[in-house]
Length: 323
Image (tube, rainbow, N blue to C red; front, top):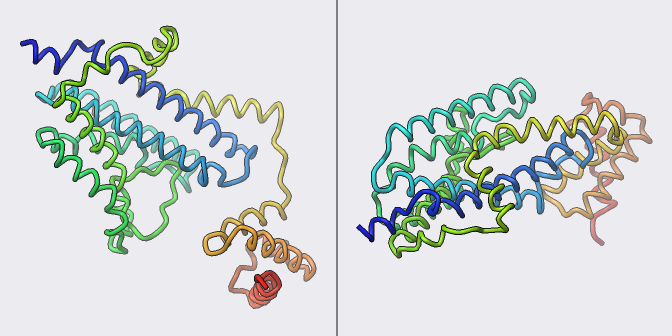
């Protein structure tokens, strides 16, 4: 009896630090979304939150949150699946995910969320049941395989939209929140592995106690215990605040040259270094203005297939190649 109590301590003792960690992950997610909102309203350069440190930050947050989902799945259902509680929670997540899809399809139809983090959590919750009874080593191997899969299994076979939720297509998927099964289910499996190892070594007691000063710990636990509500509410509140700021202090409006230059540099950097791309794009803008075709290029009436644009690209490439 004493061993069973240790493996499954009272909920408050077992979940205290886990809830606080979940609260930290959610607050971190809110900080990222704040930056995304400022970019959306034009305060940051386009693409800022989708590259560099911001991109790494977003991936760390998502990985941590999904690992906690896997960890909690083992704690809640590892000894016996509580089907009623599982079904209610799953239904709540599915409804919330569908709401996110519908709202984003209306607001940003070109980049709507069709398989974001809530969709991933719903799918992972079901798939995770298959691993509840497996040894930690097997689950860890499965986690590594899922994470590695996109490096080896990507194929044009998965390009049709019906397969996009897998994350194995060759085409670039456009979505404001894209968290496909591969590789992200691997983070859930990793969390399950850690939970199983802690159970095996009788280490769940490490989750008891506070993770921060009492007042802060209570706040973090509250957020962590109401994670779905926090996730659904925080972004509308944040984006409303940024909208109000934009009405009081409108962002500086970029000139067509600045907008074109940023897009040009981002496209160029797929195959070239930043220094070359900056000089190349400045040259392209200068040449198109000199030849009186910049407005046509900016409006999309001329593209890279246009003979005059090909000539300009050749001139600017030659002028800025390393000597």
